[in-house]
Length: 204
Image 1 (cartoon, rainbow, N blue to C red):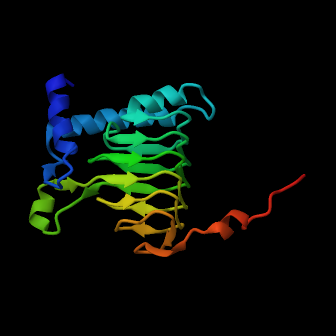
Image 2 (image 1 turned 135 degrees about the vertical axis):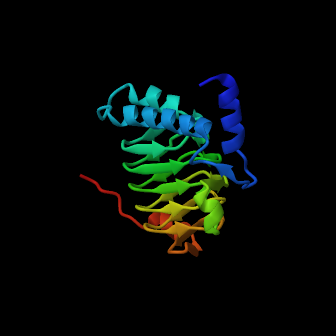
Image 3 (image 1 turned 180 degrees about the vertical axis):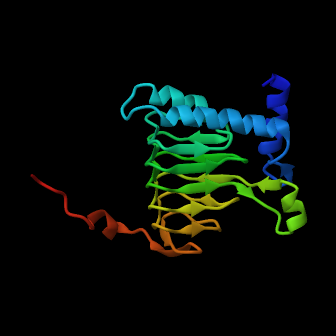
């Protein structure tokens, strides 16, 4: 893909204002999707523990900090809109639809089968059937843990020091320092001093 084409695609898919663009029939967007899917496919064929995993992940995403780990299988749309902080860990089955930027802070842990989708579609079927969609950015702070099967929707910001319970569908912003869970995801309580004493340390 030429540099001019890459620039045009980047401008279309990094629009943070939620304007509609053609994600289904525009040949330049389709080419960008195809190239990213090829990189993801190659990544997913690597063996666990392979030293090539790190460089292969760095080729897919826009940026990543030290000790960033994503267990295969991993799929995304464009890759370059994804930014991983230090000590980032994602278990198997991570999907990121990065039509807009998706930014993770440091020490973020993601359980299996989670989805982060910046992509949305028009409610009216006429424009939806034309292949049009929009994308809104997702931002995640530091020290956040996502339970199994969490879905984070377009435009959501999640603060720091947060736990998102398994199976949650996050459709609105979540403040810092809380446990949130449900569909739609709601704040259940603040994280407090007692949480640091909740589990006994195993001593063999």
